[in-house]
Structure formats: C-alpha cells, structure tokens
Length: 258
Ligand code: MG
Ligand code: MG
Image (cartoon, rainbow, N blue to C red):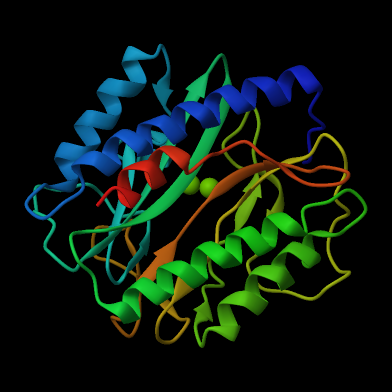
C-alpha cells in the first residue's frame, strides 16, 4: 500500500535520512585496508544510538546487524564480520535508522584504498544511474520512467542491472509500495504523486546480472563472482525536481581529500 506523506512527515523522513548520511560520512573516514566490517558496524550502531535513534535493520526479519556490508561480488545484505577489508576491495554499506517511528535508508559503495580503474568506472556509472533515476522522480511521471533512466545509464556503460531486488517506498515502514525496479519501460507502472517518498537503489553488476543467495541465508552475490555496486537515496517526489533526503556530501568530503 502507498501512504501519502504530509510535509511534516517528509521533514521527519529528512531527519532520518540525514542521520544515515552522517553515519555513512563517519564510516568513510575509517574505511581502509585492515578494518573489519564488524568494526564499522559497531561504530555505526554507537553513532545512531548517541543521536537518539535506533538501527532499522537489526532484527528486521531476523537480520543480525546495524549495517549491511557487501564486499566485492556481494550485491546487498552482507552481514558484517571480523574479516578485514583489503586494498582494492569495494564495500557497499547500507544503513537504516528509525526516529519517532519513521525510517531512513541509504547506501554507498566505498573504495577500500586504491581500486582498479575498471571498478572505479563501475562505481561512477552506478552513481550516475542513481542520479538519472532522481531526475525522473517527478510528479506526473511513472515508476517506469525512473526504472528506465537507471537502466539506460547502467547499460550504456556495458553493465547489467540486478532484477531480483528493487527499490521501494519508505515512511513508517522500511519497505512500502511502490516497488521501484532498476529496469523497465518508460510510461509504465504506478504514477508518481506529491507526498510519495521512495528509495531508489541501483544494484549494478560488472558481469552478468544473475544473483545467488549465499550460505548465510542473507548475502546476495553475483552468480559469476564479478563485482557489484550499490548506491541508494531516499527521495521525495517533486514537481520541478525531486527532493533528495539523503546526502553523500559528508562522504565526498572525506573521499575527495584523499
Ligand atoms: Mg538500503
Ligand atoms: Mg532500501
């Protein structure tokens, strides 16, 4: 079901997603060779609690951690572990919070130390595909316009789009209607309306698009073992332009200084 959001509710959702943005910005400082994703998880949990919020993923359908940390061929839903990140890895960090019953949910794929130019290009295209999706998140458009925009950019880079997992509405629940696929046709799907808040989250693969579920029952991986990237914004549908409730500016500040 789709729940129309008032302006006050959109401001609450902005607060939630700002906290997620800040959390990811802090993690950006520490993501380097030698740190484990479990250490990142503890930092995130502490920062979220210090800000009077709760992690949204911990306990969600039994998920055991604050963050989803998905390294290299892991697409999404990776469980933080004590395995150290290595130079050249990439790690998608997906973070969710709850404040006063409202949810924040955003993700960024970080380079660990120096990464190859091929992988850098995948990250650039995935982020660009997200921005293209945002460009179509306008009143009067349809979900398929977002899907088409994301898919077009990703495929123009020679990459493939994961189909088993999709973006979603967000509000008083982590996952609401509508589903927001990262592939589709223009002019199809539900109409985008004022008051709609959605998460756009392209999951883009270097190789084939197919995925498999890992032995832990959570981690979604590429079937061919090639790397995958994932970026996620929470976005309020807008008339002239979409209102992006997430910001990557804290992350970019850290990464651009390197
Ligand atoms: Mg997410
Ligand atoms: Mg999401």
